Structure formats: structure tokens, C-alpha cells
Image (cartoon, rainbow, N blue to C red; front, side, top):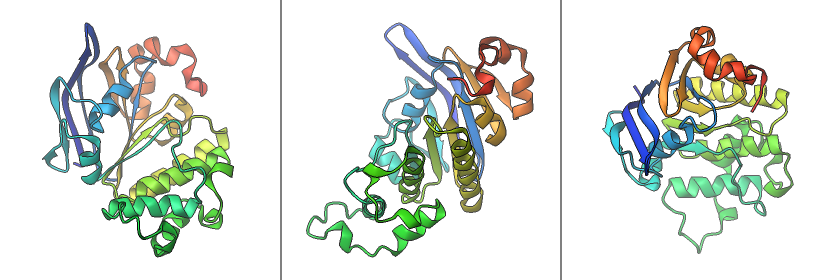
Length: 251
């Protein structure tokens, strides 16, 4: 099992943000973490990524307890992350952005005497080819369409050769056709490379079409888990979340 989360808890003052969340994600599997706003999804992600330390519980990656490690140490152990709002260097080219990620992965980011442009581009170009962005390698990220930026961000995450990929609302802000294409691409890469993927998403069409399993949170607590058809049919899930209109791409 690539990721095993055991009984995570996190409070902020008197507010219980996460209470008793456990989950597993296997290599090549896509698991969705969903729920209404305030359900605790972002808090869970931040505990997995090391930005927050759990009050209780464990995070185990490929058999190693990584609970409470800082984000850089978690990343070094093979956890990649993409964000709801893309984060790239706008003035640098697509290729240079991926080359920067590769330099960081190789622990050579502080070789300031060696400009990124002099780095062998072959590996970066191969990553861009995997996400369908090789033809735009020379363009500055600042001029790209939003859907293309999402693909660049995926290539940057893959530069770390992750065992686990955390994706925070990967299709937010994208057109419907782009959403489908990005998730199909992610699923194909995950299964081909054996990457475990945990993602949050408000577009339920995306979730039910692409998740192998779904965990539903409400007010920090798990209320349902299972295959998409099982979760869709769960009466409590429909009451607290799906009945709000979120089944048709609502946010």
C-alpha cells in the first residue's frame, strides 16, 4: 500500500476540523476525497503534505511513518502535489519550469553558477511529452491558457518521480472538455507508472467518472467510503452533499 492514513485528528482552538479520518491509496489507484465546504479536505491534505502536524493519528508512506515531517522532507520521500491555483514561474519558459523541478529533485537547485537553460533538456522534454506539452516547451508560462498551465503543473509534479500525487481540485477553472482530458491523462499516467493519486474535487462528474474509490467527509468526519456507485447511492451522502446540486459540476 503506497499511502496509509490512520485516525487523523486536527483541531483549531475549539473547532474540530478533522476527526478520525483513515484511508488507503494503492499504487496506480485514484481516490477522491470529497465533501461540502468546511468538511476538512484541505486540512487533511495539509497534514499529509506536512504543512500541518496532526493532533493524533499517523501518515504512512510505503511503510515509513512520515507523520509531522516538514513539507520538504515529505516531498523528498516521493510526495508530489498540485494546487487549485497553478503555481509556475510566469516569466520562465515551460521547459525551464520543468528543468527547475528536475534540478530540485536532484538536489542541485542551488547550483546558481549553472543557468537552468544549460541543463540537458532531454528529461524535461520527455516529461512534457507525457502531458502533451512538448510543442509549447519554449513558450513563457505567463502566456499559456489555463488548461495548459494545469498540464505544466502536472509535469512539474512528475519531475519528483512521486510515489504519491496529491491533487487539490485539479480541474478547477477549466472547461468541461479540458477537465475530462486532464483526468484521463492523470489516470493513464498513474496506472502506467504505479503512482497513487489522492485528489479533492467539487465537480462530481469528474469524481464519479475517474475515481476508483471515494471517501466522503462532513464536518471533519468520514460518513461514507466505497466505489463510486456505492457512494452515489448512499442516503446520507445524498442528504449532506450530493443533494445540494453538486452532482452536475457545481462548486
